[in-house]
Image 1 (cartoon, rainbow, N blue to C red):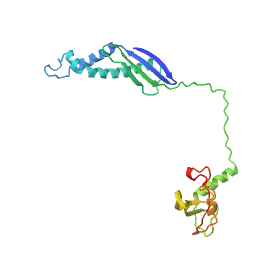
Image 2: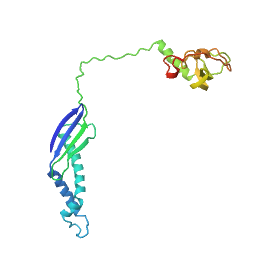
Image 3: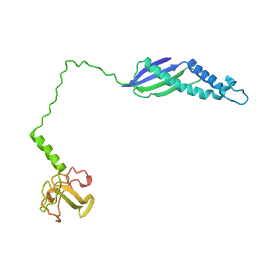
Image 4: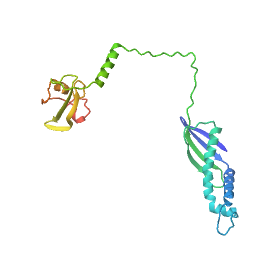
Length: 229
């Protein structure tokens, strides 16, 4: 078996493999002879079908089967011979499958990268030390408090930190625009979810109150049509 190897790029390798025709034809003949003992054809006694007839009737199919198996086995033999470590299944491109001639094919595949093992003795490693301040603890407690807290209805004007349930309709030049209206929307004042001035305008309102706000969208607003409007 002849093998040549080419590095095409990075981890990709290309193997050109040649398998002697004798290996192919020998395997084909062996399989046809074994099959002849079980084949029943009109005009021939069981097990007495001539090899010429077997080759005419079944030779092409058996040869294709043998070629596939030989390419698979010879590829494994080639990578072992060349001490390669394929990282996946190869792409095999037959070059010569003509009967009576050597089989030749090209297998393209990637290999595992070579990992260089370095000496770690004597290396200094800096161990990170986490520092937790009182402010960090207070912040975490505040987060947990907000997550686990329960909202209760109050009889006063809305203020920063309150959650309000609002209906609103946004208009531009007197006409409502897509995405500018909502009904029964929960909003925590001070969260910064809305455009500048909206939450500040809601602060101080009481339940049932209606209010008109004159606001402008920021220049970096995500909707191109509303930027700066």
